[in-house]
Length: 550
Image (tube, rainbow, N blue to C red):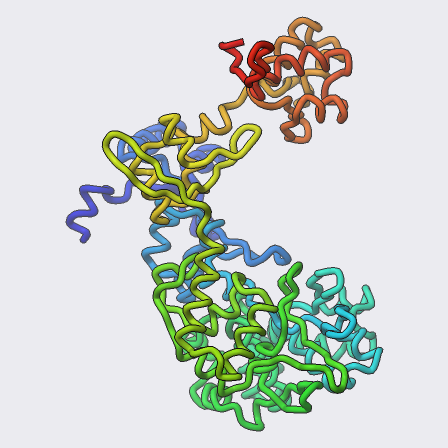
């Protein structure tokens, strides 16, 4: 409620400066630097911001599209495209959730990056992975099937080299021999489903669907590409370079009810993809669902079997049953959500072998749908729940998942942090209940200072040359005396690591000597100091003791 929020959060102070031409937002500091505000005015505005609780950076937050693309989007663009809602937008602005965390959400990533298209071929008998082009060259796929699969790749973002796990533009794929030169023009045409087609009448960039409606591409071809986009995450908006939900596609003229009906009814119009094993014509989604996932790269691969060899896939009737059976009891990433048995079966928690075994048992009638679900939930629970320990104090007895944190030289359990009074019982319970993650707790200043410590003096900065040097380099140049250098390096080693500030590395003493970050002549002295972290050996008991005890 606004009436409550204004007392809890306040209302907006003046956040920055907006330049009408060329439509640029600046912080108060940037505006002062450019001479748009006087130092006095800038100070008054910044003091007013600080008095309301925060100093504000008004520049729009940006989200990168994918690892392969430099295209970035503002948070407001994602709100307009219905990819995130207003509440999540406010949470990002308030720092409750980071841009990196939002980018990794499945519901966001599928629109920014898409899901896997069919990347290549897996030969069951030899356990070999081939690109589509290689499979065609060996006669495992017909030229027609190969072209259709490569066009679907290009139309969904990239041509894929599954052998080297690369995603390439059509030009790059041809240059690297991932596809043949004879198909370059056809694939460049399919690639325009991502980059956009040029309207010959207006010169505007238009979408795949709009080009289809204007008869700029053949209907069957356009439907195949559109279906591939939808099957891999959503219709691509070529103007904004990301996928959009169907409802937004309607609003922007990239889709309509008639086309939705065509694609929803898997008839002959949409069965433009061929299964070389069963000789069936399928939709792109049906063919993807018959693929296996490469356990190393995560890419979808079309299985090729020899004549007489067993070919595993889930038939449409079984698939319908699995998709219509849902649960709210799954753990892991599906916690507190309604999810189908199909989605759980094809999640990262279930191996290919286990998936095949369970489906075969179900189809043979030896496994009921209830038992099927129960077995899947058990597997997921086993993978997402670590060993439990019982923590007992004078006020509370609680069972907690003994999750681990990264310490200075080894992992530290939750119970160890409670015993050391680094976290309290309430936070321990919140970790166990999944209300807060290990990563989030590790980033808390009150915890991080104990797990990692704060910075020791890492190196030397030469003001005149703006050069950063390690302690060892500074000594070698005569900028520090040997005595000062040794004291600084011992202080580093005693706080956990020897630091290479040039390459931003934290190293053990052995690693630092091996990499030339410190001289060999000081190895023994620094190893002795390092024992302040790793512990000293008591010569009488053999136990590891602390620096103070030593």
